[in-house]
Structures are given as structure tokens and as C-alpha cells.
Image 1 (cartoon, helix red, strand yellow):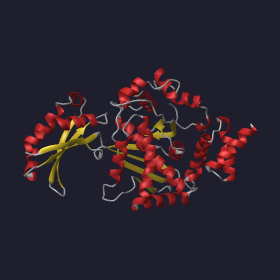
Image 2 (tube, one colour):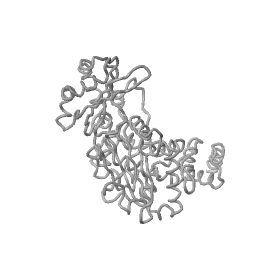
Image 3 (tube, helix red, strand yellow):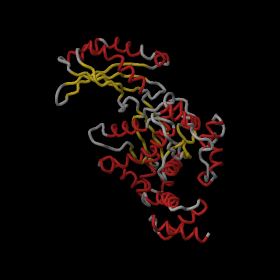
Length: 422
């Protein structure tokens, strides 16, 4: 792949975009057919993935262009129903491309499994007994997943937390598990359940909950990039972007929408690659509140050259093996398009999209307003709702914008007028 910077990419036909993005990516003919919609997603496969299947619900998959991540040009598939999300990420990425793109780093692939112990009469002494038997606990857990251990993963450590509730002091054991290239929920939960009898014997208590936590604070991904102030619209716009970030970091009401914009991008890539969107959302929002106050997941500042510098840090428990990432043909195709070979690499690309998406939102808010680009795409959806034929959509949208009237009832009238004339 030579470059993700393709001028007028959005103007190309669907077939042309498909050919550019899938060229030499190793996609099978079946994957290409399902990805392009020429072949249906097999109902037998759907039935094997979830219960009580009666049909399917599809979302558009678009490509975020202009991304350079850790020096590598990449096309990033995004599955979303919301207009402007993909265009926004692509446009923001473009402003960092000539300044080196976006760089990422990771704290590793460590997940936590929690084992809750109740009715412990001596919780402080029980805590010590757990640590005294740490090696036995780790060995017991790892016997349950020898394949993960052979790959260099498995339980690496044990932590003990005393949680004071309104009724008692709970003993909560954290299994510190390296899940490698898997998200890891199945492995961690299985280990937590398997080791529970041993923990009950050691503590004299009663184990109840045994499950992974989605606050994956030992599996953080970080992304940073320098974005051209000139390409963003000048110093005044950049000054407003920094101010908007500071507003979000100080006020949870603004931070909620600020971080929602970040997740517009992140969730779209997570979904396209067959990963767990709810786990990522839960981890991100809980991490944003880790200081006791809900804050921004990103930071924005200006460097010595006067360009905008952004960074993001959040948990990113995604995998490239197991679950839908290996069973769903579209998810497999998305991973091939991105060319990822590890969960850490995938997490970095997802974080890069989140950073770019946030910048796009802040720039729009700081300049022309968030509705300008969004409403044009929204108007296309309204035209379809009004019964417009595909060849008339652009004409209907243009007329609605000339009148500055994007209400559905007016678009319905315009649609009827134009299609009557046609």
C-alpha cells in the first residue's frame, strides 16, 4: 500500500473505492462478496453466533482514509449509522499526515478477573493468606488454559483488595492475566470460576461473583499526533479547540458529549472488527472517571511550532483471535484491510481514530458549528425517507440547503416537486 492519502476518495464510485481498499489484502472471494453485499451473510453462521436468530441487522461500512499510524499508511474500516463520522475522522487525520501522522504505545495485554469473597470473619488475615498462597493460585488458574500459557500468557500476578460496603468488608481477589491477542473474557472468567474452591478454602469465606472487569487499567492504549494549525483553519480556531478541551476536562456535562464524540469513532472500528463495543464503552467511561470526577479522555495543547498536539489514553481490550473476530467474515475482512497482526496494533489504530474524531468535533464546534457537515448528510437520509430516487438526492439536498430549510416536511415537498418534474 503506497498511501492512504487519495484525493477525492469520497467522489469515487463504490466499486472504485472497494478495489483500492481491498487490493492485495488477502481477502477471499467469499469475504469480498459478503463485504460488498453481493452475497448475503449466512443465516446458519448467524444462528451459531447468537440465540433465537430470525434475521440480520446491517450497518454501512465506510473507510477512514488519510491515516498514517506509527509510520504506516492504513485504511481503517468503520461500521456506523451516523452521518459525518467517517468523513470527520478522515479530514482530521489529513491534517496530521504531513507532520508524521499518529503514534501509539501500549501498556500490554493484561486483563483483571475479580473473585468476590463474602462472609470472611478475618478479612485482613485472609488477605495475607491469599498472598502466602499466590503461587498455588496462579498455578491452579494456568492449568485451565495451557494454550494461553504456551503463548506466553496466563495469570501473572494476584492482587487482594478489601472493599468496605454498608454491610461488610468484602475480600476481592484480582487475577492479573495476560490474554495476549485475545480480548480474554472467556479465558479470565473460566480461570476465576476454576480457582474459586481454592480461594474459599484459603479464606474460609463464600465466593459469589467470578468475572472479568472491563476497567482494563493495565491494558491502556495511548495515541498522539501533531496536527497542522494552518490546515485546521488558523491560530484562532486552534485556540478555540484547546479552550473546548479545557471546558470538557473541567465540566462533566461537556465531557459526556466530548467523550461521546471520541467513541463515535472508536466504537465504529471496534464494531467493524467484531470486537465488544459495550466492553470498550464501559472501560472508556469508567477510566474517564478514575480521578473521582468525569473528565476528557483526550488532551490538546500547542507546541513550539504553533501546531496543535493531541493525545488520548484509555483502556482498549480488543482481540484479533476468538469470538466474532474469527467467525464473522466481515470482521476478518476488516482486519485484513487494516493489515493488523496483533491486538496491540489494532488497539493503536482504534485509538488513532478516536483522537482524530475528537479533533474533528472540536474543530467544527470551534469554527462553523457541528451541524454544517452533519446536516448535509442528514438531509440525504431525509431525502431517502421522503422517497427520493438515488439520482435525485443531490439535487434535493442542494435545494434544501439553498433555502436553509432542512426540515423533513420541506424535503418531502421538494422531493415530490423534483420527481414530478422528472
